[in-house]
Image (cartoon, rainbow, N blue to C red; front, side, top):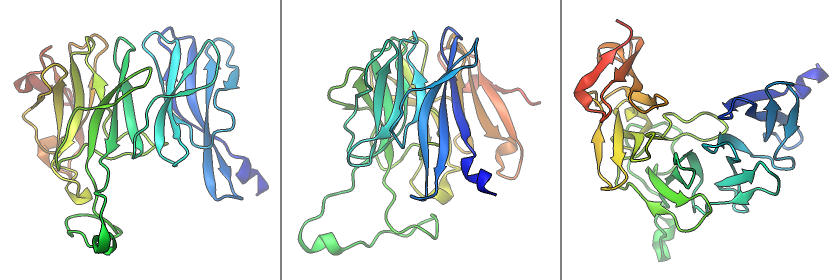
Length: 282
């Protein structure tokens, strides 16, 4: 059974805008350190030849091409073992660290003009002083029995693609869905085609048992205000924009019941008015 240790997994394929290359996450088991190591590779679509992009990194994940395909962004650990955004110029050179987030970045999205990233990261825990440092009590709610500390909300940030100071876009006790690489995001964030709005999913609190209280939102990048995309405020998730931005699809549990199948709904109004949603599964 020695061959089992040589099994390699491939995940999260991302096709370049010109269709000529595919970036993938390559995952290999490391039994000596009891972990799965991941690196990025790019596959030539015509020849099927692959080459490593992040050889030497153990945590590379979540590859995303820039809109014109000249750069590849990904997540990898910094010296503090926090996931940060790195950018690799496909013309050559070393990957450049873009973010310096005090907590791990969970996912990100390129702005359509390639000039910035929106990303999701958890808020920092409050820095306690004196005797308060030893008070690790937290409010018990509808969470996992494995919870050992208070879950902190995850929120949206914006940062230039060349790096710099990150700007907070959302805040509050409510969070976005939590997801950690190398797995896919629970509900991906995405810019509309013109970059005017940012689509995301809002949960009502951080308790894992209440994650069904989810609704897709559209954040106006000019005003900073968000509004619901649909009238569904529970069990609605995974919004995906069409390439031209005129339609948005999302998943909703049939009849609003967790025990039912999931339907795909489409918002057909370019302004994402919530009352225009209709199901494709009827």
